[in-house]
Amino acid sequence: MPADSSEDISADTAPAVGSIQGSVKPEDIIFISKPSQGTNKSDTLDILSLTEETGEQGPAFKLSRTPVTNVPQLQPLLDEFLIEDLPQYLKSGPSRHIHVVVSTGSGTGLSLKFYNSILQPLLESWDIRPLGPTADLAERSKPNTYNLVITQDADSVRNFARNLGQATQNTVQHTVVLLSGDGGVIEMLNGKAPVEKSDAEAHLPLVAVLPLGTGNALFYSLHKTAKTAAGYPEPSGLVQSLRTLFKGRAASLPSFKAEFSPGSRIISYTSPDEGDSSSTAEAESHADAVSHLYGAIVASYGFHSQLVWESDTPEYRKHGAKRFGMVAQELLKESHAYNAIVELARKDGSHRQKLDRDRHAYILTTMVSNLEKTFTISPSSKPLDGKLRLVHFGAVSGEKTMEIMMQAYGGGKHVDMKWTTEDGAVEKVGYDEAEVVRITTLEEDARWRKVCIDGTIVELPQGGSMSVKTEDKHYLQVLVDKSVVG
Ligand SMILES: Nc1ncnc2c1ncn2[C@@H]1O[C@H](COP(=O)(O)OP(=O)(O)OP(=O)(O)O)[C@@H](O)[C@H]1O
Image 1 (cartoon, rainbow, N blue to C red):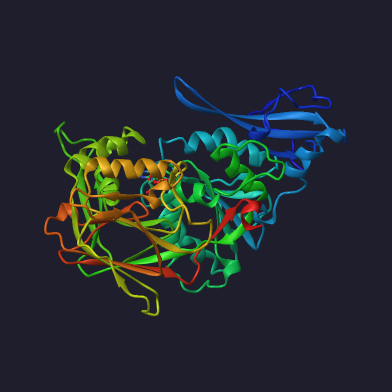
Image 2: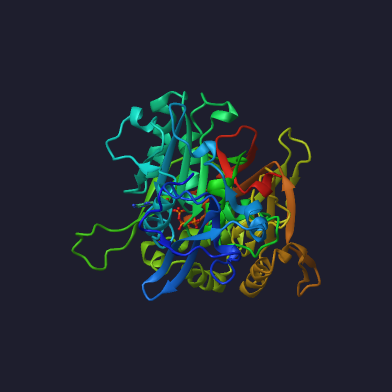
């Protein structure tokens, strides 16, 4: 039963009698709960809802608590949204610690605002409060608490993930509420993956994603088939994520391993020092040797990886999601034909196949259906199916690449596209399932040797390769809507 509503929650004072029509839209409802402590009106319930508006100062979030009288007409809403008690995975104690990680660098920087105005008061309505930064393990084991992590730099999430199992020697289960885009999940996956000890599925960290990044591919793909039993209108991603947080199901997250040939390096841009006297100082790129990475979304080469890399400069990032369109226009003018060998196989080596061309525009392996909410790159991928699929096409004009991409925005129709070239050959978008995909670059210029693994860019050496394989083991659990796991 939730405690007294926080002052941050705007509350309607008079209970709506009989009907909530006009006061709360079903698509905005997060949950319905029993009355606040101190209220003994057994026929009253609280509806907690989220509305999002875009004002002059950017997006604004509003959390509302609407008291309603419990009458029979309310039953369909109660069937869907009533929560009698907090789920076990949100109850801290000696055997479970709860963490809330606010990734301040994600998306357009709204995570902290969302935490302060929505998540913190929602948790407080259940009497759950954040611990101070100096809290020790004993305090994390107390009921009604959570460890709050606000990221300070690009290594914060990965360091948090590394420390997670070590401090408690896997005697404690962890629930991690991540206010971030895909990057936060992947940093958890790679921070966790090398630790082999905790291979019991039930002891894997459980991650709940609140989609506050740019693309949020994993969240939207995992919730693509989520639906309410009563057929209410589709909620926003953030409302859906809060419903999942309070009434979700844990599922093992399928992943893949991308292995790179020696000489491969992770590269990233960093801003020049703030104090740099030269106003024209360029962003620098930094490189670290890498042998492998785990991913759960995408491993690509060609137009996709180039777009992610060339739009990730500090200068372009200022433009938010528009940066992709800006860089895409430039890249499509060049229409580079990537010189590479692409091979597919099963893990036992059977069904080996080599793509019948050495010039490519687009090579993308994926485990998810969507790279953004409305960009369906792999329409056959189902949430949690663990299948690796390859979308690919050969060297085409910039206009043709654009046409193919627009069909992906049209629900994933690009995978049925066929066309005839000027010399009469029939070309198509290839769409194949495979357990192993190996890409060997034949490019000389380093600009064209960048691959992308869930947003991280790796530069392959000349003649270098990336081998992507489905991973049998699981490293994380993820919270999904109850309708996704049946
Ligand atoms: N305070 C910070 N300073 C620097 N980097 C940060 C900070 N907080 C988070 N980051 C980094 O910013 C990146 C944000 O990536 P994330 O994927 O969450 O958002 P996004 O790229 O906008 O969304 P998506 O990947 O869904 O398109 C992560 O790599 C994270 O480690």
